[in-house]
Image (tube, helix red, strand yellow):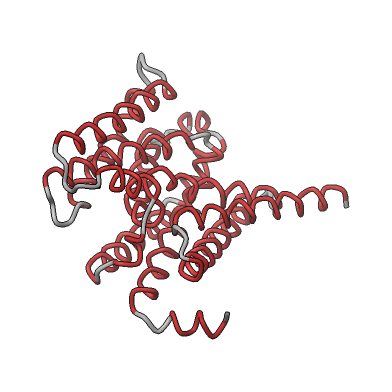
Length: 278
């Protein structure tokens, strides 16, 4: 098996898939800790549905680089979720409206303006991921690398602020911190991660890349920094192993990665229980 993997790694498309997959998973894992602790996981799920609708719009418009359309629409939806969630429509209701509405409009557009003869296949690939991660162009790889670096730098620069609003947002606001601004930054980063992860896991499975590594790390570690580091390690390991297994077994990339993350979560849960007993 090791020799087979070494043979595959000689191909540029496999190396590109691993580079993008590892970077995207690393960013998602870093962000996931904050989202889970702030109970913002629903935002990632809602934005993944919004990204599907945006992808449908890009397909109908026949845009060569669909990220030009998908990225701004998803970011706008992230800001709208925060704004409406603080208004007369509560957060869970606004996310539900967005999720159902985006899925319905996206599927309607693909049926009204079909881009191919296999609409069901296109929809399934967009929702659950396909082999697009293995057909990335050099431009796609560089876009993912640059955006990932920007996200990592943003997370590092605002680490203390994110830590503060994660654990006590009301106290942070009382000290004069602009909590609304930093919540918006979190939502925008989430939107960018969702868009970057769509080629890897599809619009419906991207939220798993954010949630599972954080939950796994929390089974064993308690400190914020240790959870963040462990979450990042779990995310990178799961994605790298999932991509390799999907290539070897010819299985869907996104589903394979999520399956690996589920196994890792079960293992971490077992270790956490053993540590508690000890």
